[in-house]
Image 1 (tube, rainbow, N blue to C red):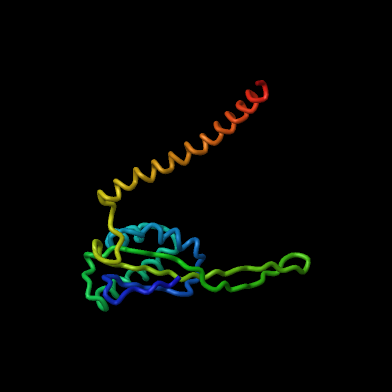
Image 2 (cartoon, rainbow, N blue to C red):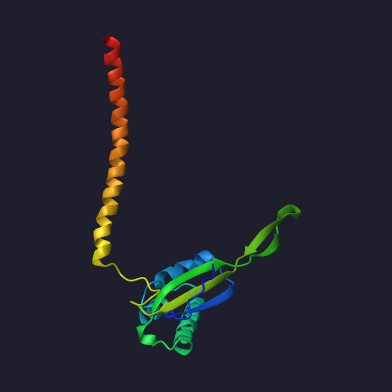
Length: 170
């Protein structure tokens, strides 16, 4: 799921591969910093008591350093644009059990990716605007009309049975 960043985009990426941690545990921490300002993300990671905070913090710092050094961006203006955790190869081990049996132990690995960028520029998801707010009610009305259609079908089915009985009587 590695995504390339355009050469002119005001973003920088950093990845840490083959981290010896379950991807689901790393995703819990990554979800906490997605969409936050860099300073806010650092604070959240500093006060989160999960084992995944250490590798995620390292990747975040690496992404900020890449943005400053490679892209010439100012660190104070950066936000966490995208973050994701992919599953890496699983190391399969065996543990001896009773009566000569063995069970499989799966030692999972993951790849952590963090993209930082400047808000309000190309390639960055902008916050909701007035145009988005006008579109939102349209979406909700579409859902309501769908619900009405289903109820209309049910009532139509009942009416047709009444019509059939009326036609049969006359």
